[in-house]
Image 1 (tube, rainbow, N blue to C red):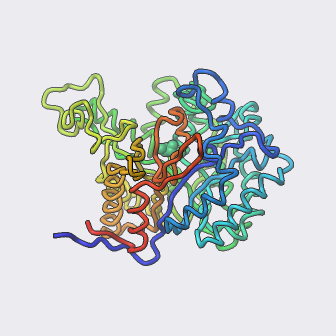
Image 2 (image 1 turned 135 degrees about the horizontal axis):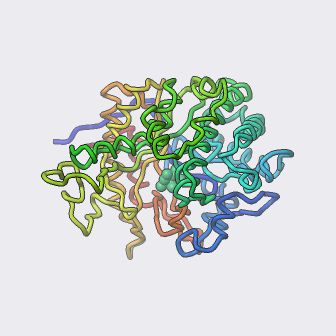
Image 3 (image 1 turned 120 degrees about the vertical axis):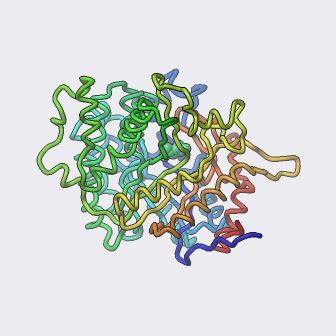
Length: 461
Ligand code: FCB
């Protein structure tokens, strides 16, 4: 027996991308260098030396891409703006060609009946600002507000959904602590400062966006995974607390009026990471960060099962997927990123965020899976694992809504295969295939199935 899963009439079905991952045209029409241009052009940083110089060439192919979105029935499109296209040096005189590009894109989307959701910062900081200190410097937060002002003055009459930041945790921790992402620094103290200035810039930008874009809804997007200890050993439980503290609570707590989590500050003080404490917090900062927003965006991909090297392993495997699915990992349950498919985690995350923090509403602003399945002899792309991944996560969204979570929409990551950061082009997250030589786009079976879900506003479970 099958059950029909039906979504509410106004549910927003969309797909997401980001500027650096799809646009290409890295130095066209007056665009300045971003930290990702710089990082990719530095040997040894990205797999196989790949870059976003051309990517999906969306900067030139956007009219076709809008047509494709329309054919797929998408109701909304989440994309980001490349700050150095607008302000090549980070601040100062705007580059008219950059603003024109996004203005035409927005007009094209609206003409196609697709609602634009604009992310201001999806990681491509102007290199000039990094040279002046980057996110660890407070001045970068001030500059972000100037940038938000310039963009929203131009687009605010037509764009009514704004996301200040995408995944500030990834920006801070991968950019300034592990160094896997641009700008590639390895300094936890600098990363903690960066996290504060990212949140502060969000808080300061929200009123500017509201002023320039009357009636708009404004929010921020966080990556919140589902963190579980591999066992009930004290060491595993404590490590899970730390991982959740660093990746989730360090951001959710200050945004929702709780300040920075005391356990994390205590850990970092004990380890000597914060010799001057949280001296970068100035009067009024925490108040600014808790500015009311209209929604919280959540990017969810997988769960994290956390095992401490020092845990007592006797009888300790109950949550450990390595024990449940021994290597080689079954692609039904594990994507090519090595991420486990765990839709229950999305249900958990949505419930936790809503019941614990009470955002007015939520969007899933990213969710998807990397599988490289390409065309069969008949030209079809049978990306069954991705289709099943989406189906499971749609069902989780529906269950969350039944439990009372005000989930307003879902954006698949990604509209099309693109440049996957440090992994280059080796990871394909698109519901549409991209041939990176011919720039041809081919909707995969997952996209065709998604189109049907959107048309029916539901599916047979
Ligand atoms: C998220 C990013 C997005 C994409 C996916 C796979 O962390 O926001 O740009 O890389 O992961």
